Image 1 (cartoon, rainbow, N blue to C red):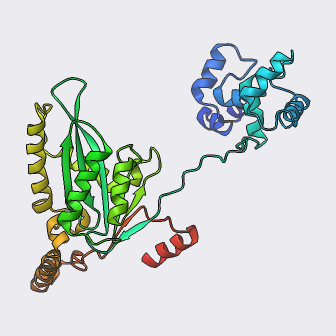
Image 2 (spheres, rainbow, N blue to C red):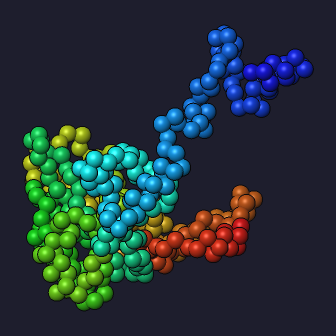
Amino acid sequence: MALIREAGAAGARLEAACAVLDVSPRTWQRWQAEGGVKVDGRHAAAQARTPANALSPAERQHLLGVANSPEFAGQPPSQIVPRLADRGEYLASEATFYRVLRAADQRAHRGKAKAPSHHRPQAWVATGPNQLWSWDITYLACAVAGLFFYLYLILDVFSRKIVGWEIHTEQTSDHAAVLFRQAHLREGVAANTLVLHSDNGSPMKGATLLVTLQRLGVVPSFSRPAVSNDNPYSEALFKTCKYRPGFPEQPFASLEQARTWVAGFVRWYNDEHRHSGIRFVTPGERHRGDDVGVLEQRKALYEAARQAHPERWSGTIRNWERPSSVSLNPSKPAPQKAQEESQNTD
């Protein structure tokens, strides 16, 4: 406060003087109205002060010594604190034990069991249809409160075509296995050529489905627990399904009504919907390979339009090149490599 008064007397504006000391003018005015303050009560200042009840350096060192002693080296604070209490010793609370260990970088996993770790799932690349499928289950509201219908959807990642779907009143691995066998047979998939990706739900990891995949020569792939981004194509498909204008506003009255609506949605999605991720062709066209001719025709049309009126074009025509591959959970590039690629692109 004395420094701000001194700056003001020298001709400095209040806002500028307060900004130098990281104090707002309103705080300064409040201090003035209170006749001055003895303790800085701001949150930032409170964080910088040492709490009155903080452990001394000697006490912290003693706590670390106890935690690292042969008796307690393999135990967490939740076990150490009660055992010390049973012996009539109190060093600190359980939270303080954790805080001191964390500050000393000793919050590592203790015990013989390996610490849980969840690595990124394996990256997969599809260069054609029926090489990489993704599937999931989503809820459909039912007219009966507390009950749901469950929509099973299998998607070809390369073409985005829905290759299999069904609706049931429960989630089971048996239903998933039957649906997958039907889609596998209908698409004529050869053995040892397909990867099926899903999340970690119980129907996805059920014994019936896994045995079916093994018999058909299909490689199972799974997301990390509770990481929806590892299965993005199925999640995006469910959003397209539930957010399109035709989705019923009221819950489905029966299983037959739900199946009828989804059947219409699948027809629209596969054969009418121009998908943004595959150059705005339909999933059915890309799955059959018809998108090659469609995209070539669009490219020729745009080239002709530019030649007819070159003054209307400031650069190249729109990109109608066919995406040659699609990646699922690609690995992140190294920082140096990513920087070099960015510079080359610029």
